[in-house]
Amino acid sequence: MPQHPKVVYFAHGKESGPWGIKIIALAKIARKKRFAVESPDYSFTMDPEERVKKLFSLNPRAQRDLVLVGSSMGGYISTVASKKLKPSGLFLLAPAFYIIEKRVPATKSPAIRQTHRDCSRLAG
Image (cartoon, rainbow, N blue to C red; front, side):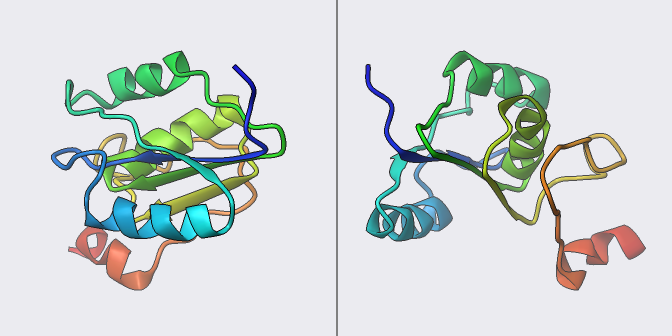
């Protein structure tokens, strides 16, 4: 199967599905930018490590640009996977850091940014 030059892999949150409102909206933008879009269903397990294994089993690849996008637990999954997959981009929406491991998972990605609002639950 030939690789697409640019591919985005979405990872949904713990209790959501692969084609929720955020993913639909972001997939539309990605397609306009000529990215192929994949959004695997991880709802078969609540275990984040099993979800990472599922992503690896899909063998995400792109000829040029592989982008991982994750929301909540999907942010954790995308970050953990990025260490091995080395994507050209990692986009996280309210990643579930500290909730799963009490720390930000190790990554080779150039930058991780969280907004103050995302961190508000950590302060209390």
